[in-house]
Image (cartoon, rainbow, N blue to C red; front, side, top):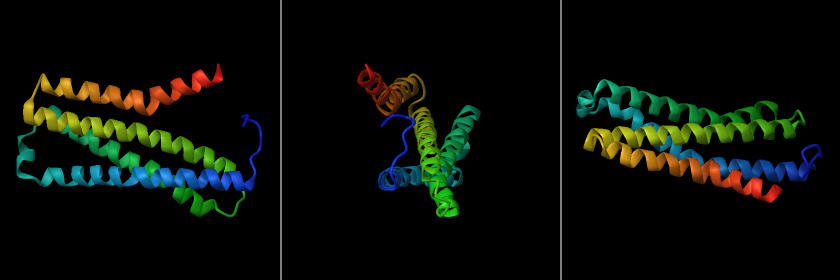
Length: 154
C-alpha cells in the first residue's frame, strides 16, 4: 500500500495484532537477559571483573532495560489512547519503538556475550566471538530485510 493511503479499521486491527504478537515473541528473551544481568552483581565472582568489564556489564544492563521499555511502550500507549481513533499514528509509533527495541536488544546481547567471553577466555576469543555475533545481528535483523526491500522496489 502506498505511503499516503489510509488503511481500513480492519487492516489497522490486523497490523496491531501482528505487532503485538511479535512483541510477545521478543519480550521473554529480553526479560530473561535483563533478569540475568540484574542478579549478576550479587554473584561472588562479580568482584573479579575489570573496570572495562564493569562498563560493558552496565551498558548491557541499560540496553536490556531500554529494550524492555520500548517493547512495552506500545501497550501502555494503546491503553492510554485506545478510544481516540488514531490507530494509524499508534501503529507508526509502535513500529518505530519495536525497531528501536531490537537495536537495544542486539546491543545488550552482544555486550553480554562480550562480557562473558572476556571473563572466561580473554582476548582474542572475545573479539573472535563478539564481532561475528554483532555482524550476524546486523545482517539478519537489519541488512537482509533492508536489502530485500530495496530489491523489491527495483
